[in-house]
Length: 113
Image (tube, rainbow, N blue to C red):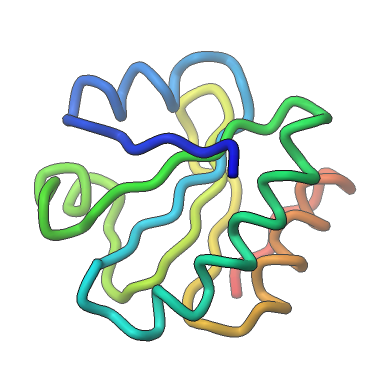
């Protein structure tokens, strides 16, 4: 499970501007929907970390300023950032959304699910 929590707004800014491609899981501990996709997120991270994608998590109840900046409206929400810009996102619990999102990263196309 190679993903790390984002601890504060400065950490978020540093990570999305790192020059790397990052996938961030915006989740809530109380959400059964988030818990149900946690395993899929973990499996994706195991696969895509090998090609240079970094995986992070943001607890929406702990970092409201980051949630507002990223314009997260539902949990779970997954966002891909590259060079400080959001290049894709997916919401909900559909495991296919995560796979489509990462597939779009691989082909260079933007997918908004």
